[in-house]
Length: 219
Image 1 (tube, rainbow, N blue to C red):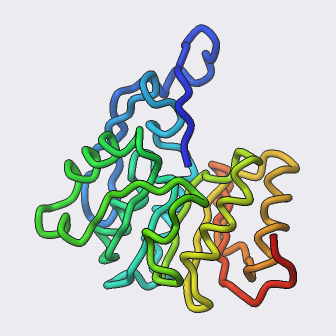
Image 2: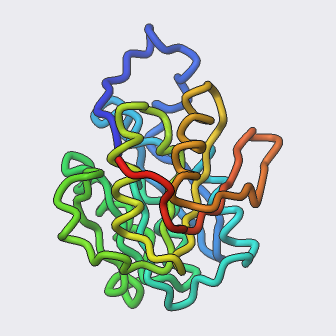
């Protein structure tokens, strides 16, 4: 999920660093250069701390990625999906339609040609047209800083339920800012076992691992 929020520097001076047109990283033994475009696409087009921390966690090797059928939700710039692909995952990298050209450009610019054939960039608005994606068809689901709009919580959970089997690992990276964030985790726990597996104190980002269980209730 992403929001098309225009950037006005005079209104949000604290975010002025986000006007940088690129952000550079080194993950999976590769230099990665991500294009950012806050003014055109808003929050979907900048790299947030949660994405960086989730990449750090993936590099630790706690989760097997090689040949795993994986999907990233609300990918934005695509950094997490790019790093997962470099670490061997077979990635589907998704976001809403307005962000796809931007997302695809970052993926193509940062993945070697031989890896690009194992990566698919596609449209996914949570809770909509889920039959386009295989039910319980993924080994790994990734999401960085996607828990921030309360109106999206129900469709996000519906999407996770569709994508995940009981064997699927879900990794969500987020900052716990408000009561709504803990409310989402409580909602998630109705259908998933949820554990915190990593915390980056410097960036104040938590990584949660979730595995599907039989629901106690339903929507």
